[in-house]
Length: 135
Image (cartoon, rainbow, N blue to C red):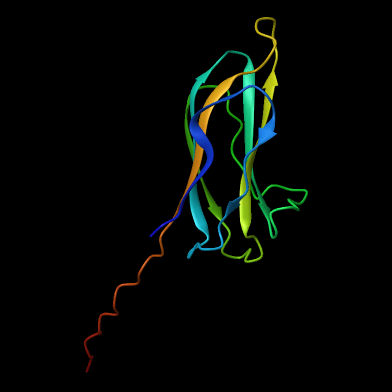
């Protein structure tokens, strides 16, 4: 059965920069995930930078993210694939977000967002079709 990970629970109100909990992906068979960010509310003149970070031990998260979602300003859904099939040392992932606000209205940014990752299942190869012999 494919893994489903809630990196940021749906409907979470973000007003400060932060990071999510560490999630164990050790049981993943494919180590490939479809990541979906869904912004359901926001105010004007602000942006959201969302990334996924990886760790071998759940403590050291390195200096660079594994995946950067495109910067977003408005409501909507954004999808991107995270492929860790060649990064076998990564056992934990977590989300990190940075909020930016400019303008003269509200002094603090605010996004209502959900961010989850669904494991992409392995594709099975169809059986080989025998080729007819040529004379």
